[in-house]
Image (cartoon, helix red, strand yellow):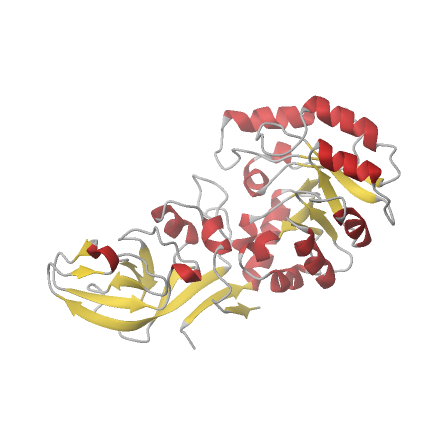
Length: 358
């Protein structure tokens, strides 16, 4: 078996969910488990949160059906709503809460013959300009939905554009836009994503939506996960499968883009971009071996990458190397690669086996 595994600490996910709940006392929380629980395994994450979660949030009907099979009673929010009218009866049968984010979805819902009324969340575009109604559109949709037989609860939802940047002017503007709609008769309200959960109490309202923080990566630009009390949930572990001594001036890997500045010891690891490790990670991106950081040397290949072991003389073939996780924050690797922890976690591919720790 190829020596590469993503070790998922389920206790860390429970811990991080509890942190989110403590940040917003008295509020309920949708645990966001879209994209296979950000790469961590939706079945295992839903099962580990089964007895303590208030609800889950997903991106598609297919994801919702998988979660509903694992949890019969939790509230389950379809964040982008139904993509076609044919999905609406299935959503009602599954007992989903659905977002209505545009005129097409609104018209489809009002024309639908549903087996039972459904909880509806009108999406307000408060400043992100991706999905949702304008303030006037929310008011018009509210008037059409409040007495509609297809609707059980009528709720309000929106999403922050810049909550990861504390003090950004748009955060307060979006809160103001959202609060300006609360003169309408809504049953429930939800605005706070992970970043707002930890920094914007005014956005907590009835339901919070922790996502990336559940998995132990930071939702903020200026605070680490550790500073927020979060525990990393995934450790991506490879092994050294070969070691080569190279002379000063020798190059490593495709394109010969990295050249040894001294006699060097190069280790080849059992992970590459086909496993989800970022191909754009530059030389110097850290990995963790024997209690210290070791730098990438040369380009990331499809199935392998190489690190400079010159300062770790005891390293040998078969040693475990952490590419991110308990000792090396995924956010640090992401910054080095010019991306974010969300992308690295969610892109770990299916060919990487997950091993779960309770």
